[in-house]
Length: 423
Image (cartoon, rainbow, N blue to C red; front, side, top):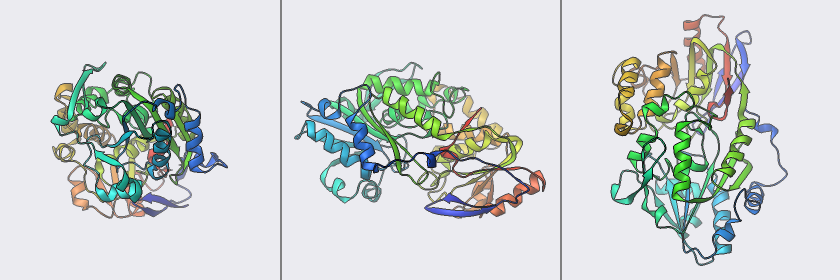
């Protein structure tokens, strides 16, 4: 069977012999159709918010309004959502002073070019846009202690605002359960210390810190507490199909609206677990496949369907390289066992940036050979970190057959980020 799998800003081909292909796992987004335009879906959600008055009512009498949005690593359709969101705010408070804050978490700063690509020239020229920098302690303010014991420090703009609003999109997340909602606050606009401790080795090691799980997930619980404590008053979250088109929108209370959105995404993305010798997937193409640091998301989905010592194949452009100084240092420490032991010995309050993705990769590499399909990164760089490398899916599959035998069963998950594997 022939496939075209997401890679960078296009696709790469994959050919799987019929005798080997066991399963194809995709979400059910194609079943969710609407006669409404994407803009109308958003407007309808804002007109019927969940658990709060309309945004235009909340904005009345407010002067300094903060709108938090996703950074360049997320496919947020802000070109559609942001103008509508701003219009709704100004309907209630025409002369409001609005700041758009880019929630970078611990990612690199969003560039001017990326802002233009995300919002379009009109919003970039007209609105005040600030890019959060978690590594500027003078811009952070301490708020409280989180349920885990971590300290919550946040961008001062949040505490200086009369109203905090956020936009985002909901998809499965490999340790927070789902993206969206409360993630705009933590990790979005928090200090590096707060983000690091929220993503501590102890929290990542929890069996409930996994895709599709919110209840009992210690990472989610800290995030939700932070959002409430800071006063995130209103969210607009969307769900999207494989072509990044909005298929649903949820607006209102940061917990209630997010929960309804997560339930929708769970139904849309959930698939029954299967097991095979070789699992092939991607990290959803650009922007999520731009560096290695982002890719444990897709690989974790593949691992959920791999048998003992099953081979995982991940397509990712890695056009932006490895993706983080600390992540790179940790991945170069030595064997996966050395990496895992080193990270798990770090106390929560001494957590360092990016250790969580290295921890997850070390855990996966101890159980599975992982082949990265990339045409942008030197294969030797990947091999030094314990991976195998290939320039095409077909080349990777040949390597996998050599490892598992010519009769090995194959499962294809075209987009590993968009699927929740039910246990």
